[in-house]
Length: 498
Image (cartoon, rainbow, N blue to C red; front, side, top):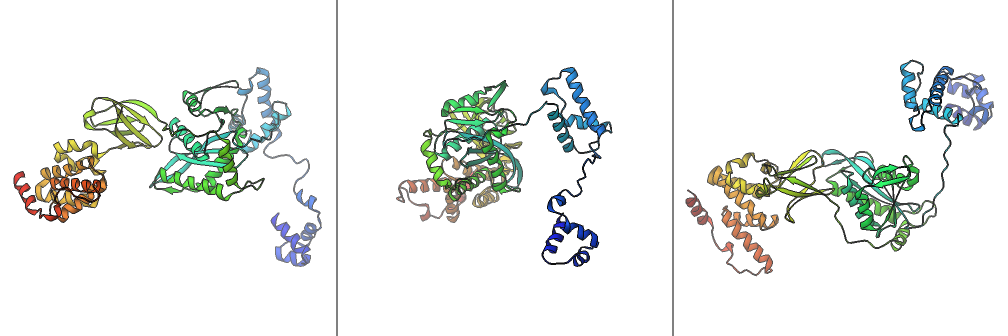
């Protein structure tokens, strides 16, 4: 058809039929027929009236009709009728049908319509007052977090009729992600909507009974906490929340096209925040031309005030094993040694895990979304002090990215004192992180090394001096270690160790 259009355009542009015949390697009669036909005849070219299909033959149609006849004879319920896919598979296996499943679907739909078994659906155009409702949905996306390809769930909240969207990605779609997304969405839009519209996700809906929805306890807790009413779409009726259905596709195509790479989940969601803000600050409504920023400002005034921030979490009872680990889903998480053999409570959020004992947080980890173990070196320091020869093979040590100055003082301790005492001194230095920030410890190590010492006692003394200096804004209560040569102190410690 493209060549025909080019021929006609060239002819009406001034070229004669002989020139066109030579240019396109067509006979003069063919060129004459192409340029002489009117547009309607040209569009119907090749479409012969009454032409029989070579794929959807009378035999195939009769076989499809036989399935329908059997349904009527057996009074089969509507939900148990033969689907186009089943008919396609069985006729294909019998050698009756050799076409595509798409053509089969079209034919089954057409024949059921002719029998009065289906009807064409009609839709009502809807209009929502600004701030009257929010639609929430999610869809799968693939992203790279670090160097690992991972599946995420793109949650999107859309204000129907007003082209305002908010998107975040979570590694899981469980209730802690749903709760966290509600918290972020209401905070982003500046208030709580009186109604939230969902589909029938299993996190929100436990059971569908006719037109009624039996909500999950989590869904009811959402309503009670924020004070909104829930509304649910009919099954397989995504058009009833078309704003957010379109918004999920829009955000996926425009913000996460291809396989985007991010350092971590936090940086991914910061990026989506920025995209949503730019879309509002620079965009206009596609129908009215009104600035989205103005619509957004008016929206905040129409919403109920937000509540104090809430962290949505799911609680579990866990027992600490002999390796100081608790197990939650695919992940294992370390706790301090003294809790071995006891039961602790673990709070699971979308991105974090907290272990709690007697109302006190005893461990805090990043959530493991893939199968793995999260070990905090702090939890194993007491054991390592008692078992210095295990330091080399300890998984928590091997996984720890030590600062170069920590590695330097460790190497020098091993050279001076050997494996056993050298590791004990290094573990003692690491224990100083319980009383100070990492930055203060590194600064203390740097100054201790500059003074010619490597002992843990000297590092501890320097840590206290730095902490006191910060507290008193530089005023020192004790003499500074800078005034002394600590080389002899180190040698004395070495003799005592022997």
